[in-house]
Amino acid sequence: MSQKPIVFELIGMGLQSLSQLEKRTVYAASRSGLITEEQFNTIKPTNQYQSPDGSINELPVPDNAPEMFKQLYQQSLAQQ
Image (cartoon, rainbow, N blue to C red; front, side, top):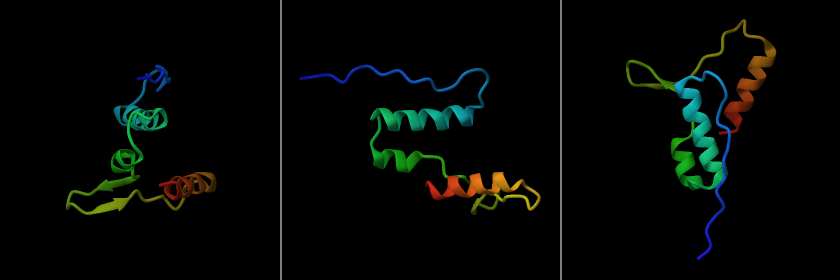
């Protein structure tokens, strides 16, 4: 039985928030085949948050946000 080669991937450098490390770890696990696509789709970041009343909403984009930010945000939503 052949074994997969060991693969290392840089997750981050310097200080990172826990949520950023979690997100990068999930994507790295998906790229390396450690988790299936189905598992990835179950745990991938959704750009949504749960409000105190339990409803789930996308994060609002401020009206005065730079146009480039709005475009990047929309692109990130489309990739899900």
